[in-house]
Length: 161
Image (cartoon, rainbow, N blue to C red; front, side):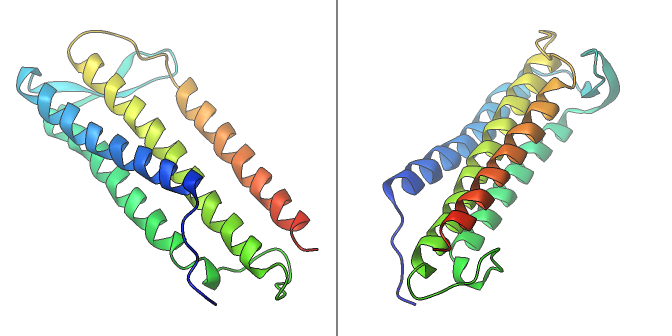
């Protein structure tokens, strides 16, 4: 299989995801000195803090986001090794591979966007500004990811011809 270049959409998604990761580290670094030593680290569904910890816990979200971005980017480079829902033929092979790779870039962008929002909300909450809406953001994330997965699975099935 010849090397497949990234599409414009994939390049845009990767760039935005990378910028999101950089922003999370920058914003955490920027806000860190002004934060109290003990901050809310978890919120219940009503948006009220129900766990506290040291402000060093704030680095966890950007680190996880960076790891996921790197992992999904590396996985996208080996889309030819995935197990697909459809039988690969010489006719559909490249389209199916590109569909799988695009799905990873979309998922990466969705996750990074969520983590960037979570970083912002956690840092603002730590300074006393309560903008946490409760547990609804995680529900929205699950719904968005589920829709994305179903969309790309249906798309893969349609590419089998």
